[in-house]
Each structure stands twice: as C-alpha cells, then as structure tokens.
Image 1: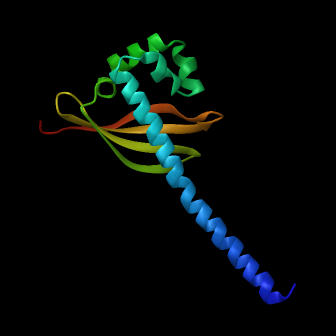
Image 2: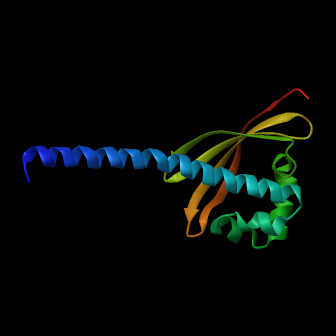
Image 3: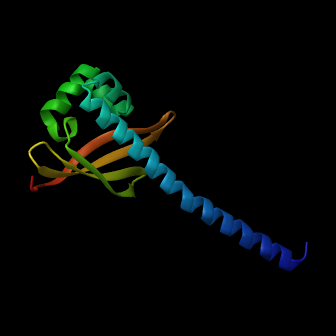
Amino acid sequence: MPRWMMHLSLVVAITLSLALAATKPAHADDAARQVISDQLTAFQQDDFATAFTFASPMIKGMFGTSERFGEMVRNGYPMVWRPSEVEFLDTRDVGGALVQDVLIRDADGVYYELEYEMIAGEDGWKINGVRVRRAGEGTA
C-alpha cells in the first residue's frame, strides 16, 4: 500500500473514532436522564416497586425491599418524592461513573441541586446514589 494511502487511512480512522466518541456521551446522558425521569415519575405515583428497579445493585442491597427504599425517599428526599419542577443540568465523568446534576424545586418553592451517580449495568443505567450538593430558597 502506498504511503499516502496509509496516511489517508489513518486520518479516516482517527476522524471516525472521534466522531463516534463525540456521539457516545450524548447518548449516555440521554439514557441516564431518562432513567432519572422514569424514577421521578414512579415516585410521583407512589410506585416504589418500579422506582426500585432503577436503583443499582448496591442500593438494592442496602434497602432490600422497595418498601424500605420508598420510606427512605419519602423521609430523606421529599424533594425527589414530590418535585414541583425538575431541570437537568450538566453531566460529568467521575471515576468511571456518570454524574448527572439535577435542579429540583420542592412543593414549598425551595431549590435543591442533586448529584445523581449513574452506573452502567447489563440492563442499562442505574442510579447508584443521590447527594444533595446545595440547597437554596427560591421564589414561589
């Protein structure tokens, strides 16, 4: 193969790799956001069994049942259980996990910024933890 063809092949391969890499994060972001949205919808309907399906194996192991999981969310994360407004913010890679920032407004008009740690599993993205990063009061 002539040298110029080898060079051209390398350029094409690098260009294709970069194009594929650029599309993967957007797809991962969309899929992770859909999982979070689906879980929030399940919480709104008090369907803790469905909400529990979006939890990672570690979270499932910690709580054991969807009832205990639901009780923890109702008591510890009422803004997640009954949000009045949800806005997806940035995503980033942290140690191999995708972290999705979400701005949630609760029924009282208070805003919370949450970090959803997402991990990829055999059957798609799972929520591996949620951390309230900061809270502030909004206007109703």
